[in-house]
Image 1: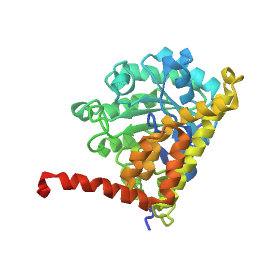
Image 2 (image 1 turned 180 degrees about the vertical axis):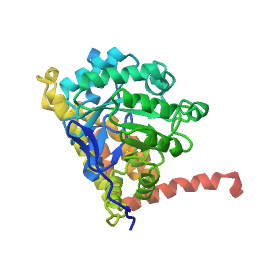
Image 3 (image 1 turned 45 degrees about the horizontal axis):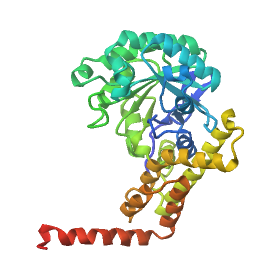
Image 4 (image 1 turned 120 degrees about the horizontal axis):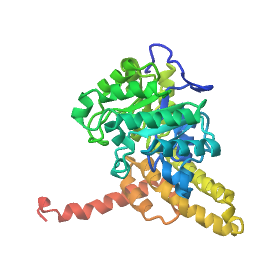
Length: 380
C-alpha cells in the first residue's frame, strides 16, 4: 500500500469553490471532452477544465468552439478554459462564457505550444510578452469576479528562457493581477511534450507565490503523485496524457492520497466495459446536444441519431484505441477499430473483442508470420 504521510488539504479558490481531491484532469485538446471529463471525475479526479476555446471564435458564435464550453454533463466544480492575445477580446469572451454556461472557474491558457496558437500570440507565446499576459489576467479577473480566474503557464519558451526565471517572475505578476490558482506545465514551449518536465522550476513557482500552484508533467501513477505532493510544495497535481484510456487512474490516486489500499489496474473485460460505456455516453451526449439546438427542431429522429453517431465517432476513435492499448491482440483490435465508420460499429467491435480476445490474438499472430518468413534475416 502507498500511503500519504499527512492529510492533503482541499484547494480553496474563493467564491465557495473548493477542490477537495487535489488531483486534477489537465485539459487536452481533442481528448478532455465532456464525456471523458465525466468518467475521470466519477473515478476520483477532483476537478477538470474544458478543452481551450478561442476567444474570437466564441464571440463570433462559432458552433464548434461554443460546444467546447458546454458543461451540461459536468460535475461541479468545473472550469472553462479560453485563450487569446488581446485583453479586451479575452474580457468579452470571458463575459460571454460566464453568462451562458456559468462555470465555477474561468481559466486562461498561457501554456499551449501549438503553432496555430502561438503564431497568434496566444498560449505559451505570452511567456515572451509578460506585460500582455498580465493585462489579459487583469481584464479577465475584473470581468468574472467574484468567480475565480486561474491560469496555466509553462516553465519558459526554451531552456535559456526557463533558466532566466521567467516562470517565477510571471507567476508573481499573475498573482498580483488576481489569479487565484496557477498551473505550471514543467516543459518549455520548445520541448512541447518531449523530454522530462522540470519540477525544480515548478517547485520554485510554488515557493514564490501564495496562491495554490498545480504541477503538471510526467505524473502517471499514484507513487508519482504522492512524491510530487511531498516534494514540490504544490497544492495539487494535474494529469494529462497519463490519463488517456485510464480514467480509473484517478481512483487509484485518490485511494493513495487517502492512505487506502490502491486498487489494481482493471483486467481487460473491465477496461472494455468502460470503453463501451464511453461509447454509449458519447452518442447520448451528441443526441442531447442536437436536440437542444433549435435548428434541428424539424429533423426526424433517425436523422438526429445519424448525425449524433457521426459526431460521436470523431470523439471516440482515439479513446477506444487507448482503452485496448497493450492488451493481447490489441494491434489487431486497433486495426479493426480504425476501419469503423460509425460509433455503433466501434461499440460492436469492442464488444466482439471483449467476448473473443483470443481470436484477435490469433489473427495478430497470423499476420506476423508471413512478415517473419519473408525477412532476409531468416534466410528466406
